[in-house]
Structure formats: structure tokens, C-alpha cells
Length: 471
Image 1 (cartoon, rainbow, N blue to C red):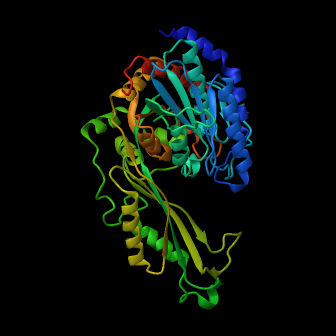
Image 2 (cartoon, rainbow, N blue to C red):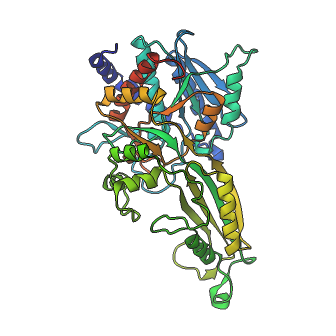
């Protein structure tokens, strides 16, 4: 039985060490998508392995054709259930104006007059802070005699779609007799890379949207030309792509206008709609947390949550082409490219959706080039039973609140791979808040979520230990 008072005091005592280790992790610019950062990503993998080893884990680093996977195992007894925690240590680039602190130097929020300590750095909440929090939770569980084997699976390619994760995980599962590395197996997986509905409202995700990214390029000439001598007759690829995008979806509502796009969308069940209503999502709080001046025209809060997490989308991420310097250069560009993606829900298939989009675009712009970039399938698990019941019990014991069961609007490629390769149920215990700034400037994490998260994971491991294996 875990003594809540003693546990909270122990967690409070760990605050300085936690901050020191988080500073070390965030101080390494482990940007997996930037080719010039390979040495830094490798250094982050080594530091992660060192931290697991320092905590008492048996550590293996699995080489892949890309970046490695780091495994940490706190193995106590073969008769105990085994739970694996997944996180990633690679981060998004820190581009964009408006950073108030150096992005790769953990900085305390000196302006906060009250509330928990807040730290700013790229990777603080996505996903180095939650990874470190879960590790401390495991240490606390072992200190408290929890009868569970706890493993950590840290990858360094999540931000680029986990292209080598499947091969690396398969190698881990196979083991290596030559080096004595034991085969990697588990009874369940918990992912800590998701976001709460709002501060003060713990959330447990049971589904992820899929992703299908694509580009549309249009070339109408050999070079940029003067608009005074060619304008009015020369085609303008930026204008044509803008018109095409307007035909693809209604930017005011987000409704996709491509025929067949919604044909395979699985309807929300009555139980899911009730769960979404109980989540107490607020459009107003959401806009404030993400610093959005206005939202699309969905007026009710439940409808807003459905649009965010359980409905498919089409979004434009950028249009490249023409002149982008100061002032106006009066040319007609010869080439432009639009970068787009769709977020998909059960039972949409990325390959089928791409063909629908490709066919639609070609019917409007036959000379456009439509290129598929990357895809991930949606993921959906039962809302209740098994590991989610254990997660809910741990949330109630830690925060004194019933968790909101919701879907996650984002995508995590490794989840589908783990579910298939490890043959184990996957649940989600995220710790990030909307205002923490996933993928945004001034990304941050706070001691309130870290300290609560340590207790949450400690209690979750205790719940797992008390339940049947493969629950």
C-alpha cells in the first residue's frame, strides 16, 4: 500500500535533481529532421541511456539504419507483470520568431509570481519532460515495493515518422545471443506523449488520428517573368494552387469537399459522445491556451472537441514559390508548391484517401504533380477495461478527479508498430497541457505536471501489479 503523504514528500525532495536532469536533456538539440544534428541526436541517446543506467536499469542501445532505440529494464521477478513505457527524445526544430529564452537551454520562468515552477526549452514537454517524469515514477514504484517489472523504450525518430522504429523493435524482440541481450517482451505498453484537455482536467486518450501528407507542385514555365509584359496571359501557379485549395475544402468550416472523402469515417458511438460531453472541453479555454485569436465556426464545445480529435481534416501547411522578400517584385512565378496533409480517423485508409485527392486534383489541374510524402494509419482501442481501468484508478488516486476519456488529434507512428510487434495492449498517460506549446515557440513544462506525473506513474505501476497479466 502506497503512503500518499510520504510519496508526495519524497517527490518534493526530488525537484532539484529532476530540474538538473531535464536541463541536461533539453540542452542537447536532438532535432532528428535536421541532417546537421546527427551528432547531437546520438549524444541525446547516450545521455538517455546514462540516465536509465544511473537509475538502476539494465540498458541496451539498439542500432538501426537511422537513429538508435534505447531500452531500459528494471526487471525484478519473472512472475511479476511487465509494463513498458514509451517516450521519444528527438525534438522539433526551434525555428520561428518569438522565443523569449534560448530554445536549447532550460530556463526557469522568472516572471511567474505564483504557481508551480515552469521551464522553457524545446523538448521540455514533447517529450523529454514526460519521459523523465515516468522514469522518476518507476524509481518511486520500486522504492515502494511495487511488484512489477518496468521497462523503458525511448526512440529518437518520432518527429520524422519513426522510419526505422519497426526494424529496431523487431531486433529488440529477437534478442541477441552473441551479446547476451535478452529478447524484449512485455505484457502492456503505456505511452506518455499526449495532451490533457485542459489544466486541471486529466485526460486518457484511447485513439489517435492517422496522417497522410502530400505536396502539389505546378510548373507553368521555365523562369519567373515580368508581370508587365506577361501578366494577363501567363499562367500564375500560386494563384492556381490557391484556387485549387479553395476547391478542396472550406477554410471557414474545415469541411473537405473532395468526393468520397468521408465515405469510410466510422461514426462515434453513443458511449463516446457521452464521454466527450463529460470531458468539459471549452473552446474559449482552448483558444486562450494556444493563443488563437479566433476559431472556425463550430459553436458548441462538444462539436469543437470532436473536430479536434475524432473528425478527419485537411490542412494547408505552406505554399512555396514566387518572391518572398521585402516589398513587391512584380513577377509572375513559374513554379509553386503547396504542402498539405490530412488527419484521418477509423476506418479511413491513407492510400485510398490519397488516390481520392490525387484524382480530384488531376481533374482540376491535369499538369500538377501530386506527390505522396508519408502516411500513418489511425489507431483506436477500447475506452474501458484492462489497462485503461488501471490508468483511471491511478488518475483518481493522484488528482482526485475522474479522467476524461478522449481521442487524440495527433498521430504517433510507433503505437501501431508496438501493438503489432509486441502483441500487447497500449494505453496513454500523457502529462502535457495545451499551454505547454507542443511544436510551438516557447515550449514549456511545469513542476505541477511533473510532480503529479511522478505520483501518477508510481500509482499506475502499482495498479498494474495488482491486476491480471494481459489485462
